[in-house]
Length: 475
Image (cartoon, rainbow, N blue to C red; front, side, top):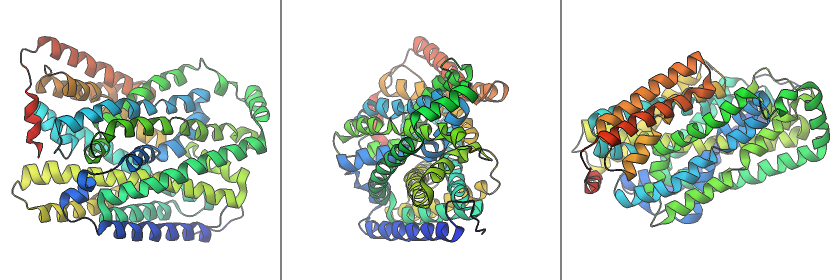
């Protein structure tokens, strides 16, 4: 652990903040976890989450390392379209609102997105979907773990591996104790911290540096960042829309919430959560535009956000930045740990390996699963193999291929399991080809287009009609 004047925080203070926040969240998770009496309580918070908590967890979970670290990175690389394009990911939450209401109505006793795919499309499509879900989940988990290390390294010089390990231990700890109940309750607090902190940082930056000086510096020395016709940035804009839709529509993180929210809360909660989230990437991305004016050229583009904020705000500001980004990381990492462990427990352990497992056995296995997923994530994070933006966008080819099978599967009874499996498989493969041959900013677009074409053929050629009552078998 190095201590140097070049950093806004010394390493001891950085580590102390981690320990303090870690203990607070873990104790809070343990306290909330005492109310969990059954596996359903642990996995779905008793299916009784109210509107305020529902909207807050939707917004806070979507404010991730991507919003607080990758949005500035992409603004630093693509300019105006970087932050505006990233904000369009709010469409995922907003458009999932009617889907969430439909899911709740069709599957009132469902547990996971895998339940839906298995019952609606059959075994082949289920296997393709599960591969996509696992790849995406670990891609997101690793990006969040890496972000914890990058944050502490950028602000205090603390070793990347210490920060990464700390964020994982903390989130695994309170999720292990409290399940989804603890995840949603902490998300509510984290949402308030994120909104207040992000607005405060941006306001102070504008007041200190001024919009005129930032614009002058960019116009004279970095004009492409203000170019609204920057081709790669425009492609990123549309790619990010479909990436965001795929992320939310397929992920058990959001399905578990739709199934956990009580009554008719789901539609309103996701709609409000999306509207609250919409301006946050613009605010966090704007911070990166001040980097050239301040003479900040980070060693890695995903460090630009916290470095600029810490430079302008000093030590107090660095503490605020740490608290905001830490809250954003925790609000997503805990959700993903819970949702992925639910998917493994329900779809693999319960449905494939131990159909006769008791509630107590499911409860116990789910906790073991959270710990195991946390350990695997830590191992994948060790090498720090890519920047956050590159790592996350690799998953775009996978998730965008699920958009049309999910939407048509919920609303159109003609699409068969065979076509759904082919749509997801071919979309993913060709999306990956475009990722490596063209660039990350077209992977999701390609995957979605191929998947849509296959689904269109499937609907036109189908002679069968799915019986919606079969989805009631998910209990």
